[in-house]
Image (cartoon, rainbow, N blue to C red):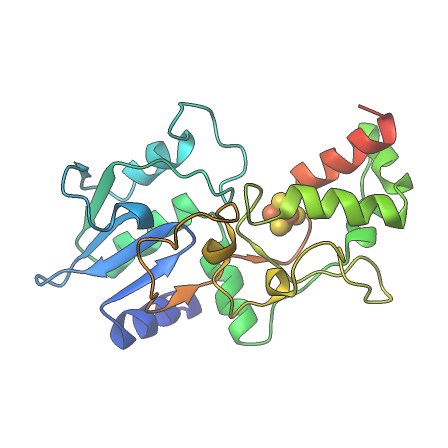
Amino acid sequence: MADPVEKLLETVCNDSRSFCVGEILVRKTSTGGFALSHRDDKATDQLKIFRSAEDAIDIAKHDDAGNYRPLKTAPKLRHGWRLDLETLEDLRRALDYFYPGRLAMFAAWKSDKLQITPLRETLERQSGMYRAAARISDSQINDVVADFCRSNGGCLRTILWKRDAEEVIASTKLPKEKFDPAYDQMMASKPPGSPTPATAPIPATIPLLCQEACNLLIAECRKVMKGE
Ligand code: SF4
């Protein structure tokens, strides 16, 4: 029997001939396979072709300028490639290389099994040099999260966690869509005044969910406390 992630992908693939995950456009081919590319490259022919799910590891590693991408959900996926895959299992592996763990989180969320951790709880759990991060004030959190997690230049994940056990919103400075899994974060990822993404209207989008603050945000909180 297919596991929840396979079932989820199967359903999405059966429902539409193309769909999006973060910056990636997935199109079903006439031979029953899948063609993946950057969403901005939808209408581009001159793309470098790759044929193995494992090629996604290298494609995701650096941005267009050759800089390493420590946060795989940052809106800086490089352009100019197409990844041709034969099976659903290949597709699953490739998407997991591009966006580690995100399909599993979405499947868990769909079945109401996703555990979500408030930021204060994640901060309290830190040890060693990151213990200092827990001293951050609520208003500093408001600013840091707005700056670091914003879809425009920061991260394409949809934030599900709250600031603390009182269920206070993570940042009042982010638009309400940042917390809405039904909203395509790519629509907010371009600077104001930019043209609408080339793939609009979007057929279907699998959201990249953030169920718990990542290490990079914790490091950013620590920097604030250290005055760096
Ligand atoms: S905490 Fe979540 S939304 Fe913020 S940068 Fe990290 S992964 Fe992205």
